[in-house]
Length: 242
Image 1 (tube, rainbow, N blue to C red):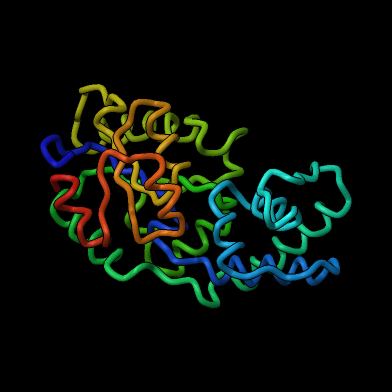
Image 2 (image 1 turned 30 degrees about the vertical axis):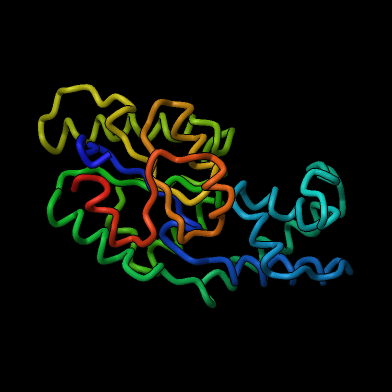
């Protein structure tokens, strides 16, 4: 991967830039308790993270032994009530324990200092407003020209629509910043994430992928057989050839 440095970087959020597991787990269990359901162990809830807030709540309401056992529809009263409480609770508590992983800010600073015109963006399945609020609060926002969430498009990752939109926007930005009129093919884009969802998103549009083994889904990441991985954010610049 380092042999051909990328012209655009797209980062996942949860499990890649930030460790948000405890606040998400606490919010899910608060919502379950609110509707009279038993709470769940944090490691189990953490295994449900990655496909957006709605799927997180759906999985928490299902049989804990079977992720696909029960997926209440959006019109289901129990799901709607639980989901709405989860969103309200998480908005108020999303920064109680959430922090950047050690090394994230230093790694991003290194990349930005060495490559001031390199576009970087966030693409997450977390709802966009909490994503942007967290990035502002933790000092991440200045590094990224765009931050899209799971409700920014009609589909979520691993559908590549969001990544393709970002590639178009980065192409326009490069033209403005450095008068770069060369096209930006997906092969010159690297998505950085911690799960199989991120691997599939990159593959479905022809982008490269760098996996983060320190994230929330190391087993799922390994099963997806990413082309390259790192064990710490400070490894990003070298792994990317930056």
